[in-house]
Length: 78
Picture 1 (cartoon, rainbow, N blue to C red):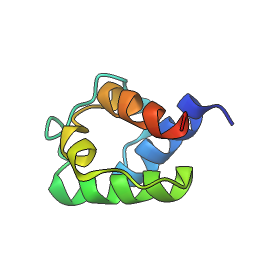
Picture 2: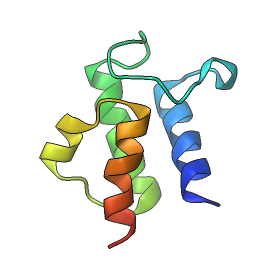
Picture 3: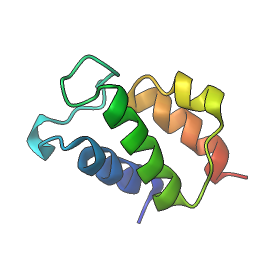
């Protein structure tokens, strides 16, 4: 599975977003599904799904779907 497809699948499932409601402009706290608790659920699912450990600074900076993809790419390419 391609990185982007896997990322999107984990993102949608972790935040319980309806696939038809998803768009790549989603940002933290801009939708009810993505609050602080859901944020940590998402981070945990991404760490498990990609077998990585995300640094605290990156957890804090993970502010949108697009920003998250940029952050994850640096872990995946290691």
